[in-house]
Length: 533
Image (cartoon, rainbow, N blue to C red; front, top):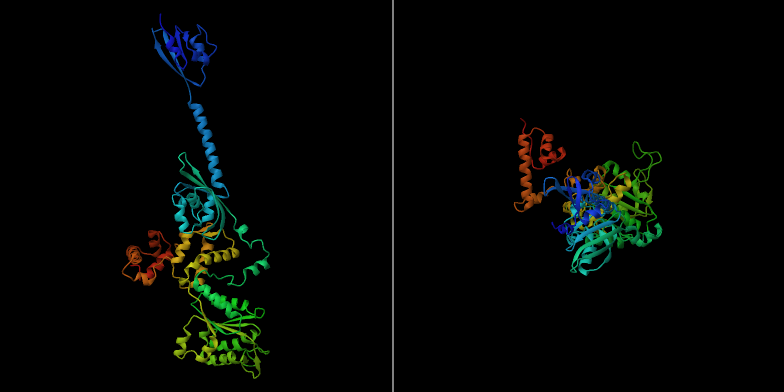
């Protein structure tokens, strides 16, 4: 007699059919199909199948019998479960990516694993620029400070700090370390919320109170992080309390007129007029009448009523003589008379006018050398230089550049409708490397152009491709040593080769992947010309 006990040890349904009818089946088959009974027809059993089973038929004993082996079909529930998991993952990804507050994830060593879109907005860097980088390196580069994740790694606990980004935005940041079974930090998850307007202690003050709290430590549109500029403002503030004449020195574009106006604004004469005269903007023939005015009939074309000059208009306030070195010698004597006695006589007149005005002069020239050369009166020079204040050029106070950029950006945004809201830190670093011969004025014009021409909400390095600030300074390009000189030589060779093969600057631009204006500038810089064919 055959032993059928082996069937009962199997956990999958087993059925044996003889001559098309059910002869034997195990308990697993009975549990799956309780309606089974002896003699159940094979055709009836086959019609009762569902898509939940995979059935294998095996010949059995003789040619008229076969064994049916049934296995549950797991592909459908697995596929359904995978689909559910995929949808849940996509939903979590969407929540992570689009959350308004920053989410920043690193591994146990502080290497960035994931960030969301809010992190791009706060730090001015794309996700690909952040992922794979150490938070300690990002902290050293000023992307944010301090690193809340770095502190959590060091202290091995949750940390909450006030964090500042490269553009001065303040964040309330919290980092949570996640530990594995062995007690090691596996992940650190940080969240941060932008709260610059909340945490500023003066943000809730009314405007008059805020102005009083700010005080007059420096002009509202000038920056003084550098020691040189802090000294300038310190001296200017002390000078403003008196009526002593002062001479502002510095290159074109450093902000001499801005400083002069600030000295007036914080002086006892602040309620009087501030009258500015650009001595280089007028021809000699008009400068005297512009300064001292004229009486009726003084010259052809003169007003019948006469006209007071800028010196008279400054009565009770401050007279700012910009570009004082451009005053011709024949006028310097008359100007000296006013500086010494505070009186003047209009052109064509005889009446003496007394004027009570404080005098501030400015120049970008070396007045001492002009005195030695006989081109500027020594007595006038000494009368004007009660106190000399020299404003350093931008290249000597590069630590001020990041704040100046943000200040200029806010100013331009207030003037134009633009999507631009921030400047990429890499752009700031590039600006800090440039020599700025035009000083703050040059930087202002650059920021204005970039804001107007940029297509995105962030000014990137690629936006500088048509600018000149990446060019090697002549002093460095002429050196036979160093990577900058090698780079200049390589660039010159590249443009020389293109100029020898191509016919127009447009063809060179297309071949090198730059703008046509860049090609023109580079050819001029290296003394190259296109060889006509």
